[in-house]
Image 1 (cartoon, rainbow, N blue to C red):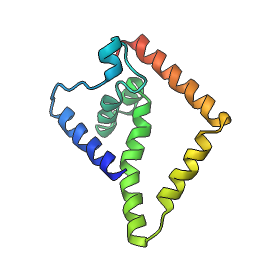
Image 2 (image 1 turned 45 degrees about the horizontal axis):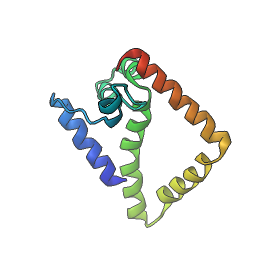
Image 3 (image 1 turned 120 degrees about the vertical axis):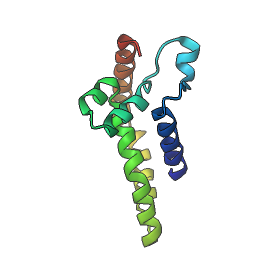
Length: 122
């Protein structure tokens, strides 16, 4: 997870330096945005304090930003205290998200976000 966060920080840095980088395979192949298209711009808007703009670009950016911010601190705290709270939380979350009462609404929200991204023309 720390490696994923570091990769995300590097990605945000490169994009914030106005490097024209596009990596969405779905958009490249189909010319349609995926449910996550716009997440980078959403996070950059959050960093600048533009919360409404970030929400309008892609609400998934909020979730990604929270994960990118909190997880490294949580993992480092676990390392220092020699505990596994992050791993245990991740494991329990994975089990719960496989249950239909959680999975179905989340998939529906993802589909709604995807439709919204397509209608916005991301």
